[in-house]
Length: 252
Image (cartoon, rainbow, N blue to C red; front, side, top):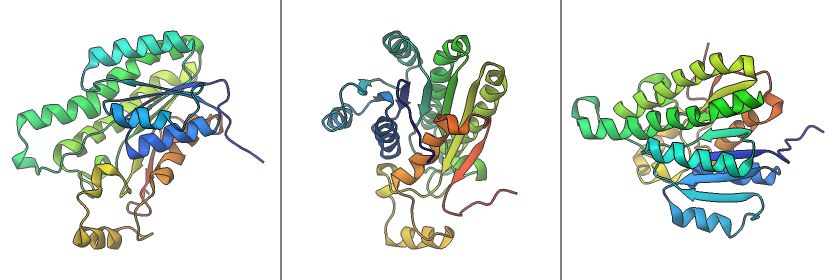
């Protein structure tokens, strides 16, 4: 039977305290991997440590809007790990503001966290992975980045996620010769802290009618494709932008 085994490998997961990020962290650890979870939510990071094994789980509170903090923290983590095998960028803040109403302040904040922070995280690990001729980078984007606005995220959010999709292809193209693969997963409607507060009965029924599976994904269902791309089962997949949306979008 083919299984995913991350024993002896080390990973960073940004946004690790979010619903999908936490599911990714817990799944990688369950598969034997060592994970450092990065987030601003120290309370949830500590809570996760109460159930995850201390030899495989660690965490850092990092402001992911600060590229300086990202670069400094990542350098320290790589030094502690010795070798970093994979990075998951699962950080994201939502914006539901329509295009005409987006303030410059909101635009800058969303792009800074959702796109510029992802750029800084990847650039912080890329030379190390090239030198070791091994790396698996997985970005968590959104169907909003493919269709100009998703189930909830509009304007700045959709633009930031479209940028992540483009960045994925750039990194895949430049990293492939060094066995550094970069792929992206685009979740759709997901049972998560980020959007659940927006889903009233009317929105629930509207979303249910748009998704062919007629329900939201669980956080774990959104996490599993990420874990697959981190694994060597996906060793010949590079530059892929995959929908995990229950049949909301259909690529030709």
